[in-house]
Length: 93
Image (cartoon, rainbow, N blue to C red):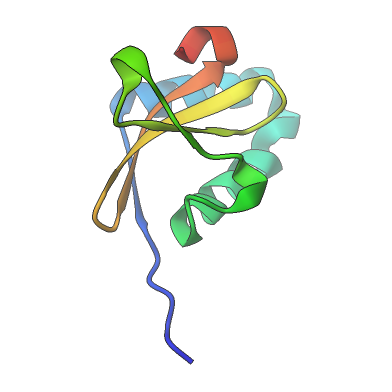
């Protein structure tokens, strides 16, 4: 059985700040957030993440769902998931 390679997560400084602020306001999201990061590192296209390519000015980037309204925007490089933005649908698009 082949070993799965884990993707490395890199967080933009602005992503780190926004996620900390978001989790401080909504501490119940912590577990969901940690699960999302874990799934992204294993398979960024895990069906439960609802990952989709973006268009327009965000072309070349992807978004996945943290909650019904919260999104995470990222870019893929080889074995790196570069986390760029987190926030509501209206904030990140």
